[in-house]
Length: 206
Image (cartoon, rainbow, N blue to C red):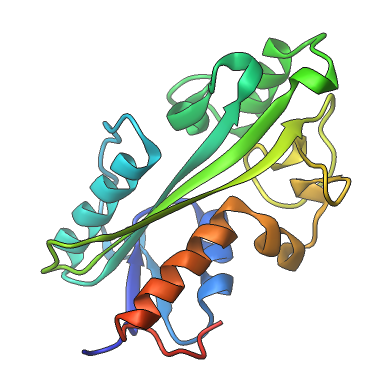
């Protein structure tokens, strides 16, 4: 079975692409779908896994190449699991990271640390362009929402996601530290192991 050499990432998020390319290693060339002129598809799924599969199948069909899609977000216990699948557009369809952060902190104003439990969740879907049996994996990263943003790394909700084990927000971690702990890093490790098992990635891929 031929291995993967080029892989379309069904996203316009350059931050996610950088993380995934670092985790995949140099054996695979990761292409953003926009580089191939592929438009984003509407995310109509009700779960991260459904949205990831929608995006991967769309990119694979449009490109004729294997495709990888990520759908991920933040679940906050005090908010009943919100923002969840709406994480990227929590403050509105065209909201940016800062607007989403501001809304989240406003919703949690006055809530003590003990009640600010949260997790990042990630689903990854891999689809070959002629594949009716996608590979889907998911993983999570437990933490809590900090009272104030801290750190300049990462993207999205990273400045307010506090990792108890390290004593830092996600945005304060070095990239290699974040990749070792994160929901996306864990999910990609599971995906890589499955693709290696199927002979689509070399066993030494890092």
